[in-house]
Amino acid sequence: LSAAGPSSPYWLLMTKDLIPGSQNQYFGVQKCFLKPGYGAPGFLEAAMAIYLHFVKTGTRLFSDSPLTYTRCKCLAHQSTSFTKVGGFDPDNLYVWFDYVINLTFILRVGKTVNTTGLAAVRKFN
Image (cartoon, rainbow, N blue to C red; front, side, top):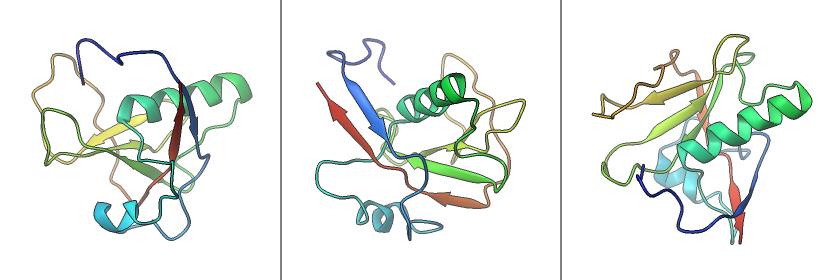
């Protein structure tokens, strides 16, 4: 997280599902599934893409049926930390941290993770 936010605006394309084969692998292994030009989403990118898709279509991606999360790249101030976004049910979109992080705001820490994989994002300036 950065107080400044992105240095310039950009468009983001995110896959609607996990990359096949990336489920329940270590993050280093999951990144090997990324095609050139694609990367792992940041947690704000993933949360916004998932939520805005729901607003537009009424369809919950990375939902609770089956319980699915996308792993996100590390937070800038915690290089050993990672987040997972998903488990989108009728009440909440969950953000799961691997351990407690001191943030200036509170995110709802979510459900037990059953299927964690990796979505891919591509940025366009």
